[in-house]
Length: 151
Image (tube, rainbow, N blue to C red; front, side, top):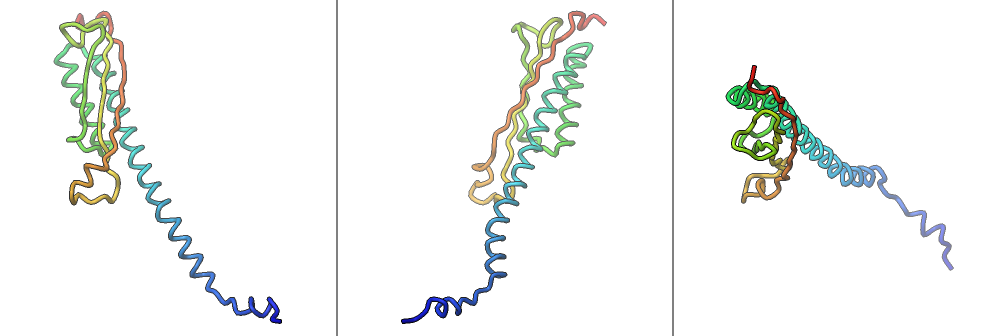
């Protein structure tokens, strides 16, 4: 009868190779997850900043023309600062209560910014970059002064 100890003595493996293989198998998806979450977070912060600052500038403007000009300038600045794709950014400005003119004194301005983020390292071949885009949306509300337009 053979002893089990002799059978196990021939267990010469390469632990370093196994460790490296398992490490790479676990590290690559983890690194991709971190890069993806960072990209999505950057775009979400950009959309939130764009909506908040645009609403604030519109609410503090002196008239409708000034509000539009300042809103566009702030939006362009935030898009550049957060490295967003300007073609993917959609902005919607609404006022409540609904009326003929937006913005107007006493109204509440709601600015909604929508954008899409492509996953990192996804090729543009066969439209994969569009199929894997993540939609993001942020909204901000700003009360317009009762004295708006009277300055």
